[in-house]
Length: 131
Image (cartoon, rainbow, N blue to C red; front, top):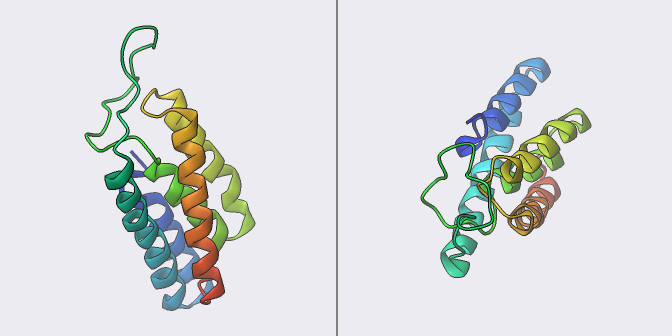
């Protein structure tokens, strides 16, 4: 749940902003994370992949969101945050992304797709000065 709507990443941006004494940092991280969420949902609306379920698969460990599965929004926002936050955020982003498969709410390819969306959005944000 920490990754829902990018809450943990926006909070990390806020903490970094306080440390730096720059509200601009909080705004840049929030815009990056939430912009990535918007881009990711646009892809979801086009692809419309069903979430993992059915015979031969273990039940999900959490309630799966009603949104389509591909690409993973949690992985996308985590990857985008890892691009614009300090390098120390990378391990947390990896754990967030991998957890989606572990919890049974995404296929591995959903997470890879989300990471691609996130790195692209985070890279654009970094080029625009979000770091």
